[in-house]
Image (cartoon, rainbow, N blue to C red; front, side):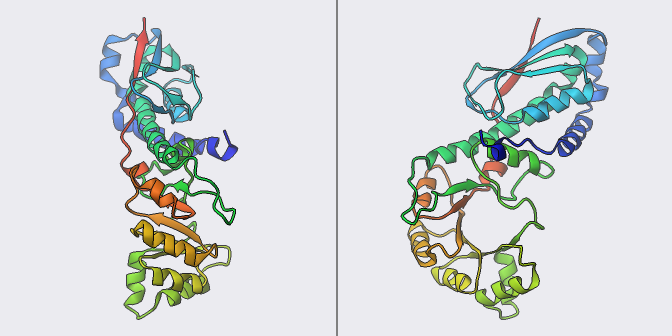
Length: 297
């Protein structure tokens, strides 16, 4: 697995997110476990897949149990990013049973959510697999994420996207210039054209930033590229329109397709020759993967 793909999420962010989730769940005040499980009782458990998909989130699940009891042994039986099938044993857990039981739901919530993101991403990646490099030698379209993430979980969900075979867009608003429809509306209110908006952004940010702007027509795309935009986001264009824009741009700017992307449409979009296909649904609408934890008595 490429190094960038397998790069784990920032441990400081993982710790912060895990602590917030454990606090929310009252895991250290688990009255049920305290009532029926002695503090010194040890045990073993296994996490099992109840459906197929792509596994993601093992570092987060491990951090969950470690936060409750550092002596709990968390042993992955398959690596993160693995294609898993129903019935597969994914993780062995051994140690203080109160910590295992109190951390069960939080750990599974993270694993199920992130595995769902990785699985949804992988489905789109596989749907465009096999496309050959374009005539000019550029690579086929790549599936990327957006900022439409669960608040507080962006670092983790972006990690899951990478495990699913996708790539990441900018992390936050400070990472790059992306002039969206409402920015354009605000500028239009001052009678600025698409080209003037691009030029304004170029003047007001460091030369190290890439300037990208959203366009909805072939004419806007031409104007944006003519003004020096580094990338253009083709918002809800038809495949036929995107193909014409790609021909017009001829590699002078990065082309990103956005809107209306699904398993049914993604390959047709990729075949237009765009560089990137951004999909908010892989993070904001991915169904959780069904996993469970069972004690081994």
